[in-house]
Image (tube, rainbow, N blue to C red; front, top):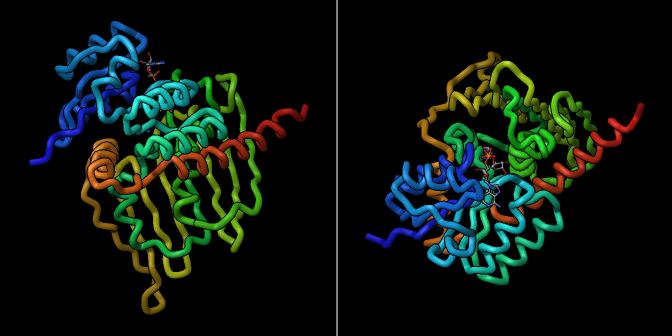
Length: 310
Ligand code: NAD
């Protein structure tokens, strides 16, 4: 049996504590410790998952081969840079950074240090998405909805960077053509940044994506619908179920897509570890994280232009 990868988790808030739980459970990882600037939270999570609370990033990375980073977005760049500099492989939560320049610097640093840089675009590991992927061919129209109740966290960044970025990365992965034009609107309701946004992206070649996201919704929804020449596919990330509609003998036939449910975050971290061991490129590497952030920035700029109009 191979030695487990020694891993640390930095930032153990809402999502980071799940990183810590999974790293403590997976047979292919040994959770060396956790670090959080909130010392009490750091101790609590360390106790819960029977690991060490560390007092700084520097101390933690000195004992690790790899880290996962789930700190607020504005800190991804300095924290991830310090971890790469120290020679650790890095899985950083989405969005990769708060600025495209910072994100590109991380990609270069990872290359220079010969370390893996993966970005936490977790829906790519959602079993529902993975079951749908082999059925997809040249999508022509993509419609997605991502809604959730007001979180009270991460509102220093707009909902485009917080939620829509998941769908942007998926759309870039599916369409694989340059962006031709972007229309976007957004409204700040409870936060200093936009809480609701809609973007229509046209791609060279004719594909169109229409994405809606909101963090002011009574219900949760994470859905994508994809229309292509031979079929219409509908997928619910939350329930992990999906259907395909196809024309057969002049009639529309509807079939469920077989999906084996699992925890996307667990699959994401397991894939990160596999890539470290096999020296393979991560499923969502730094470059893909940069592309999603760059598109989010363009959408955010369009929204800003609209908001500036009295
Ligand atoms: P959170 O506020 O609940 O947790 C952040 C934690 O980081 C806190 O415990 C805070 O004390 C700690 N922290 C802050 N600065 C730090 C630093 N410099 N070093 C170490 N610890 C630090 O936020 P959250 O909702 O868990 O989000 C964290 C990140 O994860 C964000 O970038 C967010 O976009 C991302 N996220 C991703 C998903 C997903 O589905 N992939 C879901 C939620 C959040």
